[in-house]
Length: 468
Image 1 (cartoon, rainbow, N blue to C red):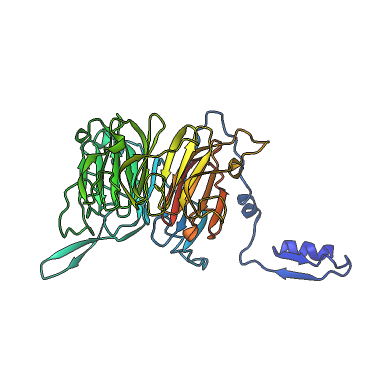
Image 2: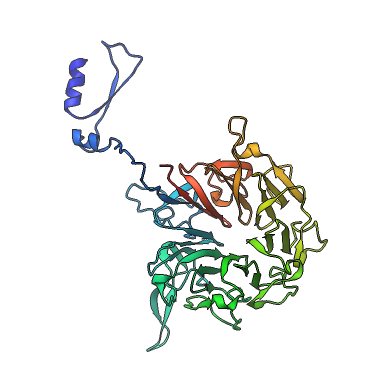
């Protein structure tokens, strides 16, 4: 037997022996590989260990999960593999996938598309991928189509499967930085420190902050509207997109809105579209706002005195504690006092979240709320047990430090950089390894320290840093 093994090794073949056979009577199966293995091949496949110095910078990473066919994940080889190895196309990504793109500081998920931005002073600062039917991620020429003799019409890509640079009309790109991005159903906002806000995409309801043009065609539109900081009492520091409305938070705490108002989304007390950013009043009059959140048609705001205000749609009981109507047309203070000091708010499609200073998460509204299948609706906030976010007697310091909402999904980031998600798991957007709906917060495995997350309708983008 020893002689046979020596000959097989000499021939570079793989030997598989039946472990139940006797040494003097082996039953063996021999497979010949399609290529000749050498010592160099084996050494190349060995792991390379490198020592990391204490001054080494931590590396940023972007991970994506969810529906792939719209291009919102920015990874072309998932739905359209090269097929050299006959890999079948993947229409949904159920766990976080590394998107290779560097120096990203801001992320935002829209309805089937994503916006990524960096703080670099380069000419190109923003990238987009996904659905582009309304030019919500910029105008990208594809080809010229002949209409009549001598006339041509330039079309743009309706779907961008990989991150593509978005050209913006900067006056001085070298001195301008992007400080925030936001995505709606079919429009986007890009906030800069010196050149105001750039708005693009669908403006049928004035959500881009400019006059509504009857019959305007948004497909293949190169229109990028700039709203200067001088338009507001002080510079804008935060932009938020709902489904078809926009919110602008200034440095001094004033809140402005524009767009669709049929459900009170703008908080201006009217149902007509609002094409110009207008300051919100109601219970917000004289109040300094520090945070604002919206994803669909409901909006929440937090003041410097930790009071919570809400307006917009209450179809699923989001604002049932202050109104019996399905809409709240003006910002109204919500009578939440059991949650102690609130430090963050997050508004989703049918439910909302609160985070207090102790790191406790509270949820109310309708849908999968995170407390099991038996709780589908709640008018008042219900606390999600801290143990579901990793708290235990062995880890008493674990607490949630950031909350985010998508249309039907929710996420929470702990102080240790761990990400938990729950809710509607459409196309595997929760990143938990399956496409089943998740009724309790579940830990997402990324291998990195998560620092930010953005949830969409059927996809999610995660920003993280390496542990070393």
